[in-house]
Amino acid sequence: HDALPIFLSAYRSDFKNTVENYLPQFLFAEKTPPQVKERIQSEFLQNAPEIAVDLLSPLYKTDSRKIADQIRVPVVAVNSDASPTHLENNRKHLKNYDYVTITDVGHYPMLEKPREFNLILDKVIKSLI
Image 1 (cartoon, one colour):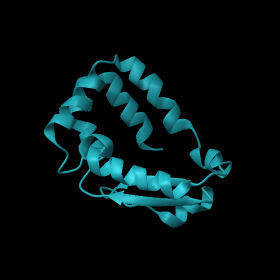
Image 2 (cartoon, helix red, strand yellow):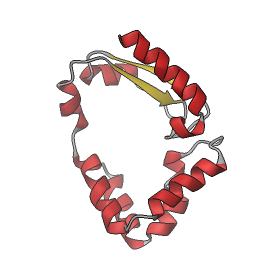
Image 3 (cartoon, one colour):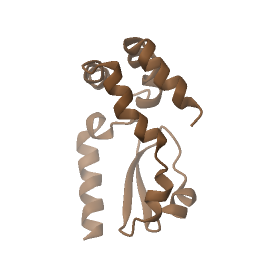
């Protein structure tokens, strides 16, 4: 990932500014409630920059495709419409992959629209039983 060194470097050099001004473009949608944004940013800022970098580095260094190739159980994602879901690409590695879209949310649909998220999750779980 080309953005990895820049992203981690920004965390190291100015953690607060990165959490407050850079991260939101990846985590929040236009309609993300302000209280959700404040909660997430507050939780991020409770950590030391070094800890955040140590926790996030493996996520960007791990080849998730190799891991996904080994998964044999059905995977159903609850995805935001803030970024596209590439069904065909996901199915190259997750053989039994599908998704449900929840609209007008960012990275935290369970916090942004908890009732709708729970209804979707319940329906997905029941479809897998």
